[in-house]
Amino acid sequence: MTTKQRFQALDVMRGLTLALMILVNTPGSWSYVYSPLLHADWHGATPTDYIFPFFLFMVGAAMVFSQRALNALSFSDQATKIFRRTLVIFLIGLLLNYFPFTQGPSNLRFLGVLQRIALAYCFAAWIVLYANTLWRWVIAAGLLLGYWALLQLSADPYSLEHSVVRQFDLYVLGEQHLWRGKGIAFDPEGLLSTLPAIVNVLIGYEVTRHLINASDKVKAQWQLFAAGVVMTVLGLVWHPVFPINKSLWTSSFVLLTSGVGVLVLLLLVRLETFAWMQGIYKAFTMLGQNPLFIYALSILWAKTLLVVPVGEVSAYQWLYDQLCRVADPYNASLMFALIPVAVLWVVAWYLHRKKIIISI
Image (cartoon, rainbow, N blue to C red; front, top):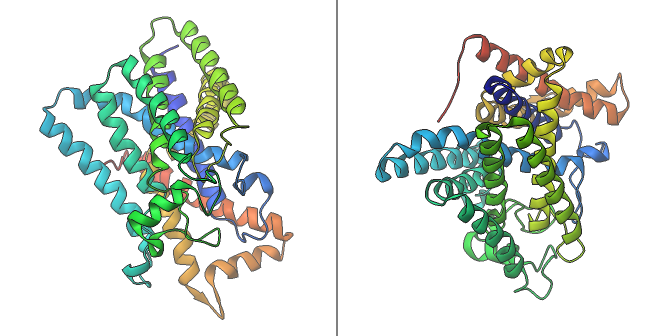
């Protein structure tokens, strides 16, 4: 297997993950969404619950290449690059929460998807720079087991209302700055639950490092296949005592999603050998070349449609209503979600054609 092939598989996984994230985030109506495209209500996992962990996995994969440049820098230059990248990603996420700037900052949600990516990247970057392979795995295990222990500080450790995850965010951030999608102040991208998310990034780094650097590529793939199966099984076995839960980002959830992530990456590596896959691979590769920019555009797309009026309803509602004229509510909702995927793919295609890579 050539270096180019390995790069392509990673880029395809990044683009595919981004497309699915846009798809599940922008249905025409949240009342009419096919169940696989919804998150699990609490314990358990649907296909949608794998998308964000895959994104973190790919952050770790990208670090294999960025860390090579960081290794050559002084400590102060390393700190400048890492903290600047962290701050930029965090602030973009914060501004996307604030957009369209019609609310006051007193009840602005501080956290979110990009904020978690920023924080998980920051911690993982330092671990990768200054811990060897053995210690990276020790730290990963410590984070997963330590997080399990932290949650036991509550008498009802895996509940929405009483978990340490919620109590910590309430204390540090305040109720007015948390998400309320489940009826009470609770943030699924909370501060404490970012600790196990760091492990998703570390596993993405280790898997990609091994895949890229191994001299025997076939052996490396079999080793990673075994590791993916073991992590998946461990996550499922752990579930009865430490439930798989995306909102709490439990350690069993980390193992399950990381294990499946490894298997998906290996599947993409194998499928690349088929000539008929090349067009599909190229399409997703283009989408994955500017993931932060495309993701931010997807949020702006949805929020702009919600505030632009068309008659007595928003443009968002109007467009969904038009689709309901030609399809049932569920299919209309799915068609609505596919529109930004298509539009943003065109944007990605244009950036690819002009050789524009927007990096931070």
